[in-house]
Every structure is written in C-alpha cells, then in structure tokens.
Length: 631
Ligand code: RUQ
Ligand code: CUA
Image 1 (tube, rainbow, N blue to C red):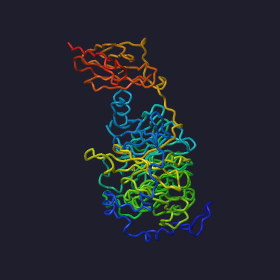
Image 2: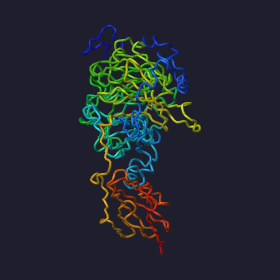
Image 3: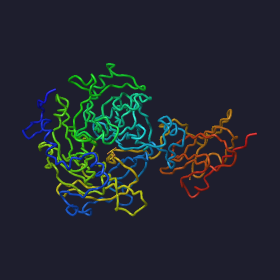
Image 4: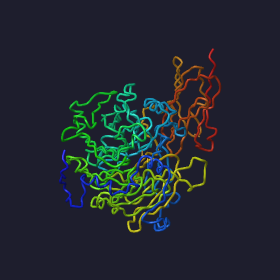
C-alpha cells in the first residue's frame, strides 16, 4: 500500500485534498466540537441552540409556498415512511402530508386482518413468529435508476428480517428471517435495476450464534446480506469487522456502501466510541459474487458466507472484496449522489460529512485516498438527501437543523472547511432522517423535502408524556429564496426514513384480481360446506348485505376453515368476517378471497359479522356460527 495520489478523470488541482490531508483535519476542527463519547451522549439527548447562517425570520414564510391540496384533489407524490417499532409502513401524500394508508409488515394489524387470516399468519409464523418489528428504511424498486412502481422493501432492525411490499396491492407479500444476524438495519437495493436487495447487519454476534464465544467479543461479527428480489431467498452474506449501520447502493451495479461504528469491536458505549475514526465499508458486489462462484465461502446456517474481514485472504490482493475507508466518527447515514459519483457519509459524532469518490475507490491503492471532500456542516450530521441540482441536505441532530451544502464546492474546498455550506434552517426538533422527492434515484425532483424529527416538544397540543414526533415539510425548489418550512405533521413513533415517488409512477389496483392469489374464489354457485373427519370447510361469499350462509353449524372440537370471497366489483366496498371470541377478523376488499381456520372448542352461538360499515344494512350483515356440544 502506498499513499501515492492516484489519477482520475477529474482534473485534480492543488486544492483537492487526499488522505494525506487527513491528520490535519482533526487539528482544524476545534476540540470542543469533536465529540467525545461522554459529551456526545449528553448532547444527543438535548437540543442545542440553533446557529444557522439564516435565522428563521430570514426564511420566506410558509405562505409564500403553495402546499395546499384542495378537498378532492390528489397529491403529487406518495411518501412511504417507516413506522419504526410499530412494525409498519405509512403512506403519506406530499405535499399535503395527509396519511393515506398504513401497511402492516412485521406486526399484526386487525383492521386489515393482517396476521389473522391463514396466509398472512403463516407468513409471519414462518418469518420467526415474532409479534413486532422495527422498520427503518423503506426503499422502492427501480429500473434504470428510476422508480418502477413494483415493490417496496424494508428492514426489521429488531428481529433481523427483510420484507417486500407489493405496490399493486400495498401489501406485504414476502418476509425473510435472515440467518446469522441480529438487527438488520440499513436496507437498499443494488441499482440500476434492483437485482439484489441488501440488509445491513448491525449487531455483532458469534458466528454461528450457538453458544460458542459467549463472552469473547473479538469473535463476534456482523454480516451484510444479499437477497434475491424475486424468490426473496438469501443469496449470500459477507462477514465484516465492526458494527454496521446504514447503507446505500451505487448506481452502476457494482458497489454497496455501509457505514459503521464500533470499529473497536467493543461491547460497552465507551468501548464502542473510543476511536476517532470508524469505517465506511465499500462492498465490491461483483468481486463478492466471483468469490461465491469460485466456492470461496463457508456454509453457515444454510447460507454461503464470504469472509470480508480485514485480515481475510479475499481482502489481501489488489482487488479486495471489501474496502475499509476511515471516516470520522461513528458515521451514521450514507447515501450515493444522484449522478452516482459520490457516496456521502455523515459523521454523527463529528461535524463533517465525508465525500467518497466512487470511481477513485475502485482504483486507489489506499481507499482513504477516495475521500475527496469533508465539509464541516454542523453538529450531529445523520443523513443526507439530494435535490438533483448539486446540493446535499444533511440533518443535524444536535443543532436541530437541516443544512444545505454544495457537493462540488465540498470537493474543491479544504477538508474541514465550512465554505460549502449554503444555508441552514431550524427544524423542530432533533432530526433523524430526511428525504427529498426521488432523492434515491438518478433524477431527484428537487422540490419537497421532509425532515423526520424525533422530538416535537412544544409544537402540538399535549397528549400525555409520550409526545408525537414531528415530520416537517420543507420547500427546497427555490435556491435564491432558500429553504422554506411549510408544515408540521405530528406522527406516531417512529419514522426513520422514507422514499418519495411521483404519483404517476405507481399504478395500484383498486379491486383484487383473483388470479393474483391462491385461495379459491367463491361465488354464489360455489358455496358449500364440506365435512370430513372433524374438519369442516365453509366456502361462502360476502356481498351487501349478507354472507353466503345465514348460519353454519359445527361440532365442538371441529377444525373449521372459512374460505370467504367478497364478490363486489365496486371500488371501496369492503366487508370482513369477524368472529367474536375466536379472535378472527379478516378484511375482504372487492374480489378478494381470504381463508381463516379455527378450532371450534367452545360450544355456543357466535355472531359472525362484517366489521366494515358497508351499507345502510351493514349492521344486519351477519351470520351465526353454532357450535354444538360434543356428546
Ligand atoms: S437510522 S433516523 Cu435507521 Cu438514522 Cu433511524
Ligand atoms: Cu359488509 Cu358491513
């Protein structure tokens, strides 16, 4: 390894900084700003006074921007927000910030009957049987680096899972319980065409985690997992040193980037935050696939696991499968610029963002040479989004601000310079993620940005000690006028990230196509009750205002499966089948069929009813389940 600067297409001038400048960076940043662990812990829990270049008064008022969506009119964008430890995805309209729908993913949800019918409860059971999840990073499928409207993907940080949501029906249709990992955090796809889905393993554990190396943290590892988008099976995993955190894919089918903290491999907070730098890990996914192809893996937990740790032979030569880039300090978010040129990592415990030149990374002998910019943006930088006009927007958790800065200026400026900063706007308060419209594509829209703020403090009517969070809509479409705060939106805990897509790129169905599911469609002429050896199969339809059978008689102890179709063809006429005391509620949208199986273990009369207010005779839409006592 040498420190010899490498050449790239870009004409590098003397002001361009390379890894040789890295040491002085830390000197240029006043020590009081360079977060030490103890200070960081305290400061992260409060919100400091805001010291933006512009005060709130300098920003044009919200009245200058039209974010209104009149009654009956549609929004221009869908936003898919994660729901954190509610385990769901939420769909908002932008710019109205109206919540349009919730999509349960890892937790059951009774209004949709998610986790109550046989299909979804089996899916959740096969995915580990956990009752909750922690969604953070919803990403949408792309073709040629643009949203194709097919799928969304999201992680479960809690139980190490990944899920796929079918955007035809806005429903979770696949979940994989990822082996060999706890806590899948970052989630994204290999672009341009979403041919692999990545889940970034956060917590380090022994490999395999079967009771070995319990108290030997040096032996713990975390893994990056690649998932096939169609089968949703795990394709391969890569072991790495240190924790990982967030991730993003390059635009050209080769690179994947993950931030990380705890390069120290510690287990306590002070052990984890002692070092002044941690890594951005750059995975050469093509080299990894070559290694898998060549059999250079170990099979662990049924998965092909490639060793990407620093001392791995696969990292020894001139084409390492994982490049470890030194970035200050516990970097959190990483995102690739729309043009695919840079991966930008936010320092979290350091006031800078690091701009990594992706092409240079492939050529440089020392991956640190690929850090071509390191603007000093403010305190607690977490995540960065883009407007497609060369600007980056970074949340400053500690400063409670969003900072706008110029990417090429950051490459031109000295490392640690504040010069690339264009403006800052106060947000309320302590922003985590932020997202701009289509920021994850090659062609962001550059008009709306949403800052997902962790605390709302005094912004809303008090509702008890648990406050709502505050998602703030900011207009970024006018570079001369500057950023404008337009709207506060209270949100339930806890959105971590979002993807915003132009509404015309999605084409959701308004009724079901029976071809799209396996359950048998039951029309009036298909209704029947089949009894065989203590099993009863009830096939019935539902429509305004009746079920196919006004009563169903079974014996105590029978296993009863209901296959129920909503035969309505009219948009928006929903029914359900709710059975009191049997914990059943299945939602039935038009042309939808669902199945639910119960054991009729309590004799008695049970009113089966429709739980959606479907017509004036909705309350009368019911049927009886008569469970006869056993002899
Ligand atoms: S991480 S903002 Cu998944 Cu930043 Cu929460
Ligand atoms: Cu059907 Cu109410």
